Image (cartoon, rainbow, N blue to C red; front, side, top):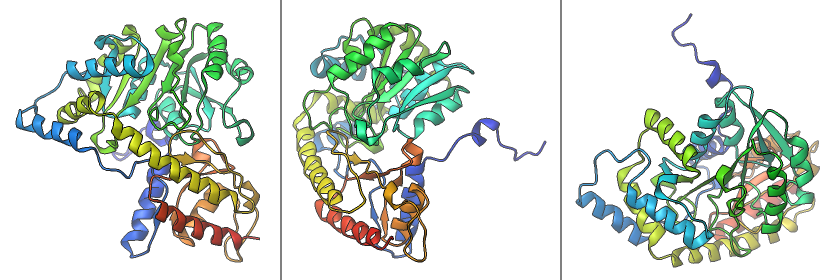
Length: 399
């Protein structure tokens, strides 16, 4: 056996396409090319000052030693206070596990509860890491596709048809990345009725975009009492508080599951960054008006993106009520060419727009949406208009 042989586990994984496209964008920029990056789901706002001040104070107070594996008690208490305040849900600090981002929290749940040969249902479009994390557990992702004509949301009938004796979990996000769509309380209630008939199914609800919501009060599937003891809510501070680099996510779950995830996390990362945890306490308990300011700007950007996309012949777009991404259907351009490049799929179109139009966005295939591309509008109106001008021009050359 060769020393540089990689594990089958790694060989079976795909590279994150969002990170890969961001890397390609940076590569072109390093060559002096003016690339507009609409690929990463990251707020372009800075972390609010009161949160940064809490981090500075933590450094002065020498909060620089190993933190507890599940997180500092004051942060876990802050999470429970947030869950009560914003969601009307009661949790104990013992039910909270703080991790290095929401992605780790999801991995904790999957790796703690899913065995080889188990099935995990994921509605498509989905976040690119969902199927890959399931593969890490040597389980099988079962995809339910929901197209733009049904607002990218699955029906109870689709869910019922996908559940088998091997189904161990259901993983979804609302507000959704990459679609920006949100499940209403009524829609969640209909799905909950299906889960009531299948008590073996664990529900993993990714709510990291909770605060980026233009339609009203956020709804969590954990609100249904008959499901709460098998729902893991995944959330964090990255999106709502512009704290992506602080790497703090958390899980709220039944105690049996939080203890399992704490055991797992204790063996491969231990506790999350101590300074970032103290900053997160300030985020969750401090001035919440900073969220509204960001959301207002995101909404104006969304309106501009949808307006511009709607003017482009051949582009079919949704008008999502949350998150900060849009997933237009661009399949009408498949088979077309500008004379040099022929577009066969969404990846071809994304690379064409990058190389010719110098706009970075992400192909839909890695999200389970092969007819679409994902556009993140976490940038200024000025840059959005400039990017849309380039996209419109490039697409007009395809025939």
